[in-house]
Image (tube, rainbow, N blue to C red):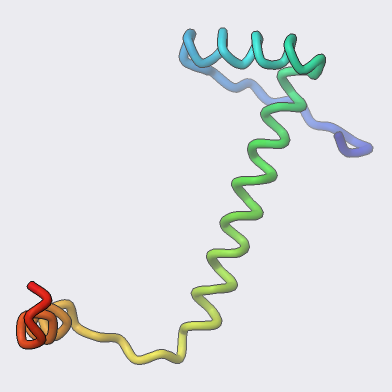
Length: 77
């Protein structure tokens, strides 16, 4: 955890909370460690998605209708 951790109240579904407590105990880690890691992974995934969107921002947009017509024309659907 970072040098200056912040406290937050998070409400979990009871079954999810039980599973997290069991996993934390089995891995000899805290619930906070598991949640922090999950949030970090989620934010890293978002950062990758945003980078990909930016990289592809100059690509031409294809209207859905045109894509479907092309698939039909080529016998794909």
